[in-house]
Image 1 (cartoon, rainbow, N blue to C red):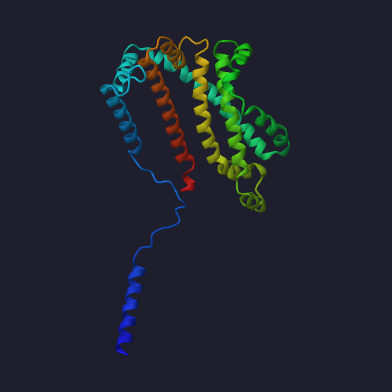
Image 2: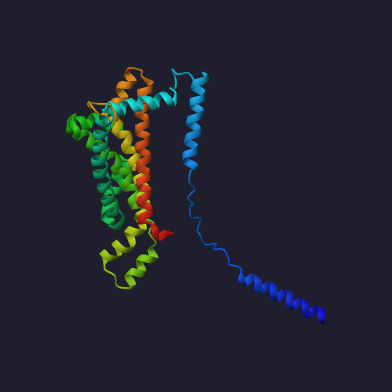
Length: 279
């Protein structure tokens, strides 16, 4: 009997100590955890390996220039002032064309997701033009809008438009219908349901689509600037390639890479601001 009492006391104290310990939260829903410095370390290691390979002769400078040579070419480009002469026109074309295409894509995508008549009329059209390589349409845009800025804006806008439409109406379709029914049950107006339920629910897909759209916009920017542009990153790369100047060519490619990383970072910041409710 004393042994049974002692055993019960041990079990009771174990249960009390277990209850006193904090229970770890297990409902994170596979939320991504931010891991700092890993991305920069990967870049640094890759650049160091290329530098070592080019300096030791394992990688021929005729195939791939050393990162240090590209860096000094970039510094020279900055000091001469030519960096801004090429970068600012490219930024203007990217912002104007990308903004037009993304705004139109979001608007059309939302209408496709909300209205059956619009869906029936526009989904086949979007499906028909989505797989068309937009670069192949550049001569046509030059004929329509001229060789100046109009054709460049139009090409970038058109290339940004279609993936944004697809991402937007896909996001609207994936909004939980029980939430919409709940809003209807509480007597919310149609516009309130769209503004408070549909658009916030579709926002993650819209922002993911913007990542893809802006990457396509950078590709089309370079293609457009290679035809009839005196200044721009694409024109700079074309000139360097014609002269077989690999240092300048890779300096231009580095500018495009930095531009893409910057845009991705900005969208990431926007996601953290607008989608804080998901955490």
